[in-house]
Length: 174
Ligand code: GNR
Ligand code: NI
Image (cartoon, rainbow, N blue to C red; front, side):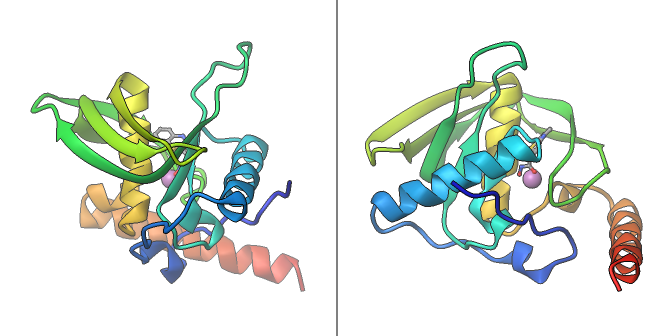
């Protein structure tokens, strides 16, 4: 397994629309294993492949509480087949938008069809944090970040600060 570097905004690669996976094979399972390790190391509760620079429709998640057993989830080619009209606000963060947290409203419940770690078709009925997280991750597959749901003013302020801290980081690494 390997910990992969995570891309951060405004990296243009994060705007890629990811391509469907052709086959859930050992190479894809290795990517999912590496993504999970990277996510645990960060730490985060979800990760889309594009966040490690791989433009494939693959997501890993683990919403288990710290003291509970790990509960990894793997989603290949996920598709939203239903969302509730009712929405719910949640204070979101993103490993690709480090240190910024803002409220985003999304459908409170969602149904998702996907392939699991073994390539088997599954359906997830999601609500609460699961619904929020899977929708946040599926946005990544379309090249969308949670800051794209904010006002242009807020988004631009965050992007400007991220650019500034990247420049500062680079200067420290000279
Ligand atoms: O670790 C993460 N926490 C989080 C909190 C609220 C809503 C969404 C998330 S996902 C995020 C990890 C991440 O960036 N996934 O793409
Ligand atoms: Ni994210």
